[in-house]
Image (cartoon, rainbow, N blue to C red; front, side, top):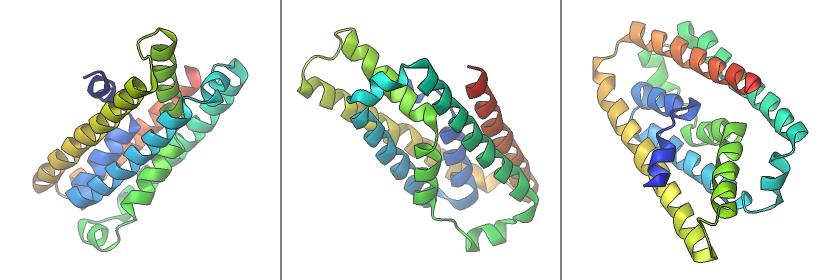
Length: 190
């Protein structure tokens, strides 16, 4: 349940998966969800290593935040820049590999590593997760929550697609771009 609650913190990946589902359908959004889950699993795994302690160093935390800001702003600018260049017909014939897009967006987003290392670090330090079996079960629950939450977002987006025309898709491109830029700026000032 805690894993599912953690997933409800809507961020750039949520908007990107919803956007992918509306523009390209459930299957493509599910590929992206698979990539997000894989990256989450990797970051959960390394959150048990020294990386968790390194991120607590203010200087390194600031560098990671700066990199994250640039990555999110870059993705946001691309959404905005390409908003008028796409049409529904062109979109269906020109599908970027959704799995690799999900890998890039999640792996290059430092919010992900900060989120998971902070979550697991605080639970372990607080004595809430004791023993490898409990840690593995908790991690599996978090990953299952990722699949369930983003899978339901993908499913919902597929049905929203029926009510969306090219003008609305363009507005969505602008909106997702602005949201990603806003998250990048927020990350910088945090």
